[in-house]
Length: 241
Image (tube, rainbow, N blue to C red; front, side, top):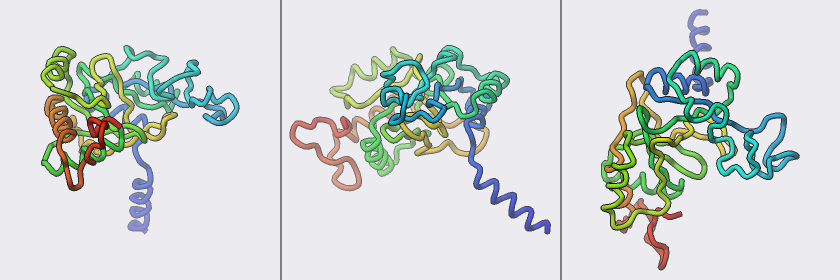
């Protein structure tokens, strides 16, 4: 009987993945990354295609033209991001399904993001070259590579010396934010493409310079096998889609 009960417990544990509160507590308390709840999706049965669907935007905020539905702070605002365990527990006790928003920069990671298709191909190239990456957050449309915190001056100097930088790259630094998995937004489910290693240690993060250099190099290379497709005439960078 003891073996059967133990087996049931293990199976039940496997089925239950970490929720938003667990993710928020791990990020804030174990890793020291300030977080806050995102606005989330509309409730009460409304959907992007249903009645009251916010003009096709499935967001709980009052903006009918919200460009990141459900995936941004609203109330509280971004400046409320914290590592305080009591505050985090209170937030998610009241809104258990709220997305987990990471306030980037400062004590927290920054990020470099690019379109999902280009990101998948770029990561394949970087893996072939032995590039060590940190956690990677994925949505249906964009992937974000977490990097060590950087300042605007550092980023400006890095980009200034580049002959060209793919126009699709976005930088999430001081004053920015990023939604962490597992979160459900109007743009789809947020997941880990490269999850942090299990344990209490803060995830390792590469420098932004190493990541940008690698992405620009991958974009410029021909990569005939398993990498980025060769550019069509007039297409420009292979990371621009």
